[in-house]
Structures are given as structure tokens and as C-alpha cells.
Length: 123
Image (cartoon, rainbow, N blue to C red; front, side):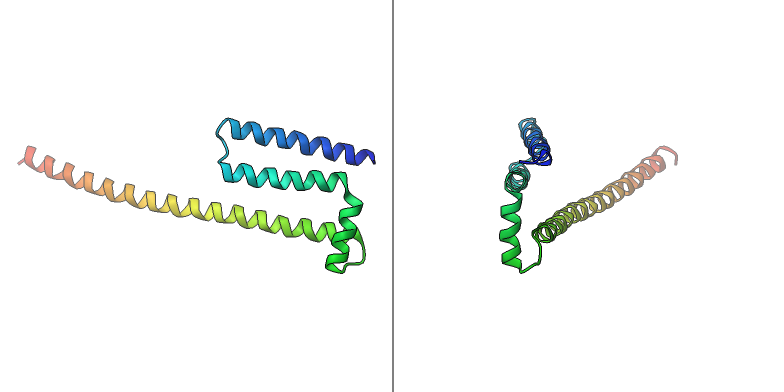
């Protein structure tokens, strides 16, 4: 094993414990916990057997070198994560917009009621 493999294994194990701790503090939902632990488990396996996995992916995808195969898979996973973040941000923006509209409508109703009360008090 190379020194970089030991470093990668250590980093991945620390991240796995970190994600487990965040889940224990109820900062992650079950689905998020499972998603991140699966990703980290995959990274751990790749860290332990990089050459074997790279060669298998190379054969599957028909690429020239094993490292190219790992980069293709890494880029693909990155796009999936970016899309997941995009969906979460889009959902949050929609919720904020709807909440802002509701608050504006309620504020307008309150202002109308206050004006009616002022008219009654000051004839």
C-alpha cells in the first residue's frame, strides 16, 4: 500500500465518523445519512483497491487508462451531487417565495384592519 492510500483511508474513516456524529445529533435525516455513508464507503473501497477498481472500470467503459476511468466516475458523481444541491436550493427558494407572499398578504390585511380601527376611533 502507498502512503497516499493510508491518508485517504484515514480521511474517509474520519468523515464517516463525522457523518455518524451529525446523524446522532439529528442534523441529518436518515436518507441523507445513508447517502453520505454510501458515498464514503465507496471512497473507502476505492482507497483500498484503487488499481483493481480502476482496471475493472476501464474495461467496462472501454477507456485507455484506469485513472481516466476513475476521473470519469468522479466527474459523474460530482454532477449528481451538484444536481442534488440545485434541487434543494430551488425548493428552498420556492418555499421562501411562498412564505413571503403569505406574510405580505397577512400584513396588508392587518393594515386594513388598523385603518378601520383608526377610522372608528377618530370620526
